[in-house]
Image 1 (tube, rainbow, N blue to C red):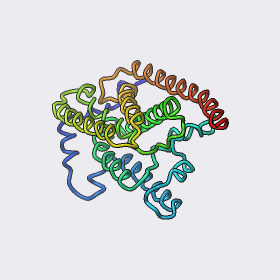
Image 2 (tube, rainbow, N blue to C red):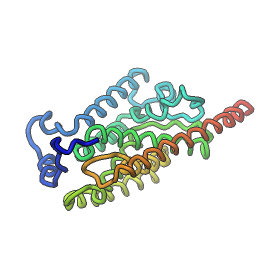
Image 3 (cartoon, helix red, strand yellow):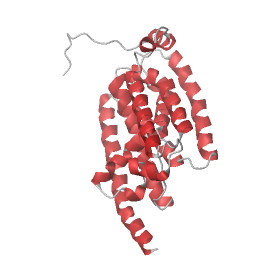
Image 4 (cartoon, rainbow, N blue to C red):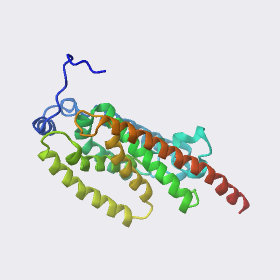
Length: 266
């Protein structure tokens, strides 16, 4: 229950956002509002370095190393002990360019989203987008690709962040002319990335699409003073998201048995 006499944090205004995005000074001062973003980047880079070592110091990571470290590989998900494969792929990358693209994208939008949603809200957005993308990749892999396609990368989360930025112009509280312009610009970024996903072979389109949907869902389930979303709606969306993820995984576990049987028969 909220104490009416307790000091209330004001909703962040456009002036604060503009000053924050133009802030000068040392690295720590300029990045004071994106600590979670920097931690996520640091962890992801550290994981990639481990991948490189395990791959014999070759920066182009083999499928074997990716699978052993927890990449999405649908036929390996056989029960609760394998559920980590819906989270770990967010921190694995296939080569240096794959890593750099995702980390630059994360850094570019992290400050705004982390400041508006708060550290906890931003972290929730990152994981909801990533998990939703990995569940989509898992389901599509079993349905259309025989369950033997390897996928990994923070792009599931990054697509969720892109969509979250695009929605700020609609969901943010107060006068948001600056955010509306920023959000419209993000629509072009999303379209370019969708086109790239469709044109370049080997990219998990289902993972990117799932991450984008996860980003939209997260913006409706994260309670933030800076968003218009009513708290009851946040709770309902959160319950529906958990139920949807559980249902997709439950369906997949049944499919894995059939795929494994067909592989053994072949």
